[in-house]
Image (cartoon, rainbow, N blue to C red; front, side, top):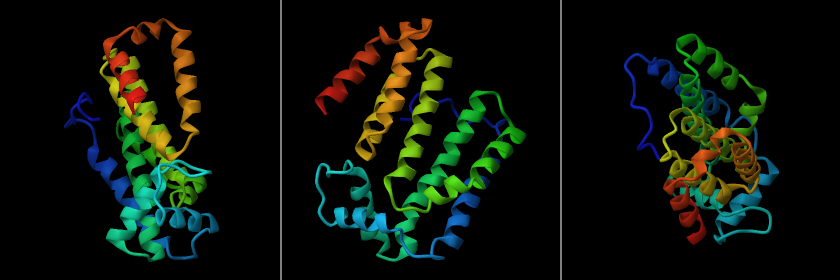
Length: 210
């Protein structure tokens, strides 16, 4: 997915980015055992004991990841909550990449990531063992690649977008709202020319075959 991303720039303050990733993980590491698991978490833990291609309420990705994390890290509350905390840390990276696309530097990074770091909503969702933390991450990643597609006019980003939407759909169906909103708005603007491209066709065929 990173094949046609802009290369890391020495001028961009990546130290700030990774500092906020560290702080985000540190916040959760120090607080993840302050209280017990939310009752919904037990549903997803139970699903991880009975892996399938999908369940009545959700697609399979969350259960599969919980199974992997339980195998490597154990059954403790801290270990189970490491999954949403990790995706919170990864979200910091995509927030920073979006800031970079809009020309932001050190202060913009600090403001954007501080807002994310101290947001009560995200502090909560990145603690809950539920599909929502992953869903927020896939929305962020999808928006970043949409932004790159629009700015660069590099149609290879269709591959990135469809991969993110495809994996995101395996986590939570709600990413369809982002996908539909994007494609409708694309068709209503001059950017519709990006649809008439081989990479868009390749991506559609790939998703259809899955």
